[in-house]
Length: 131
Image 1 (cartoon, rainbow, N blue to C red):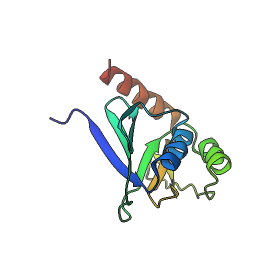
Image 2 (spheres, helix red, strand yellow):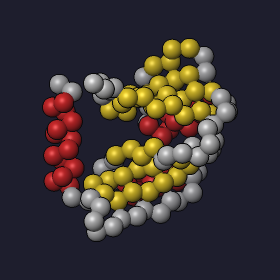
Image 3 (cartoon, helix red, strand yellow):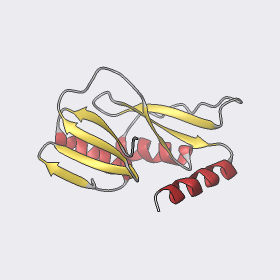
């Protein structure tokens, strides 16, 4: 049985990477076990590890669920100077989504539920799962 998940991405310079990801997540890392490595718990049991090293070949993207994709995109364009990414949607897909890259080429993205009742139900279910 899987009880938690981690995903690791690499950045060439850890201090620059920490600043960039602190801005992305609007907070400092939750855990820094040693030099060159930091972790954020995105949601309970789901961790993103940022490690100093050579970034991997393109894979992903790693997408984060958010409640307002346009506002978050605008914040990152302003605060992290990323390119304004396109937001996509399809009638058969319950979310809209967009993809961007960090300065090291790691593909990241956001998605937002179109139906806000579905989003609220999902958030309620997640809260129950982690109580």
